[in-house]
Image 1 (cartoon, one colour):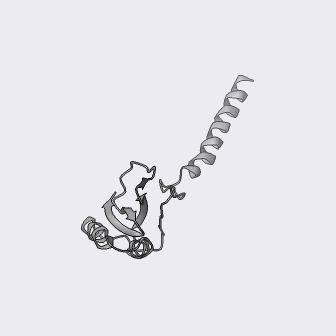
Image 2: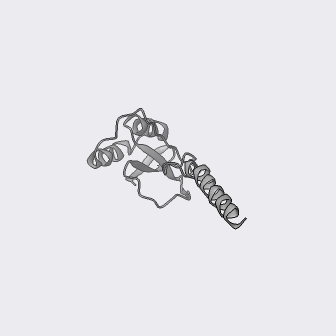
Image 3: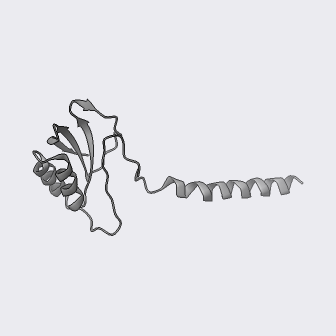
Length: 115
């Protein structure tokens, strides 16, 4: 009876692992934080080099929030608003080299950083 229980416990543990692993996903948090916008697609080509994301971040400063988010998405990068009109949002501290963090004041991007 002990061997049967041991086998059952092993089977339950293996089944739990099989069920839990897909829930881990690929590290992409598909639920954006408050005030953020995120885009990703498996059908898009990979984003530009790190210099490309830096250039994209610099190019959106001065744009409206909507135009900046669209331009970033069209270039294959992700974005999130980290501050709007002086209100800072809680954000994760993970480094995403293809993500552009936006600071928005009066619907204009006033700062854009990579990460």
